[in-house]
Image (cartoon, rainbow, N blue to C red; front, side, top):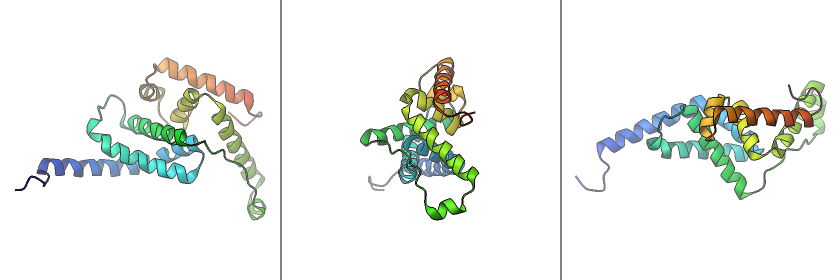
Length: 180
């Protein structure tokens, strides 16, 4: 046997990691994509960063310590990947561009929902990053406050308090009926 060939244990671990990554992507891929979209505001960039998240997870699987949920660990990676991307360039703000054909085929409810979504996206971008991260991981990522706290190195009470303050700010800035 030559020294340049991997040993059988290494090959088995790589196969197990690939299988685990595939299952993670199947189970959490859409939610990771939503979190990336909420943080980045651009669909194509969010898709790229979601893929980068799963690659980083694959590379980091051997270091996973199971201190929190696997989902929270994955969302922590996604959040860090998004922050790195944001540091490389300005955040894109979503703007409502009304296509005449789209407007003709849209109901009033669709347009109102789109406007609310865009306004919420704008208001989220104005929050402190620490407040925005808690909200996005809690609501876009559907993580518990305990999981959010673990990933952001906070106490659960601090995570709840940040979320509460951020929601209050959003309620004050948004038009009545836009934030429930």
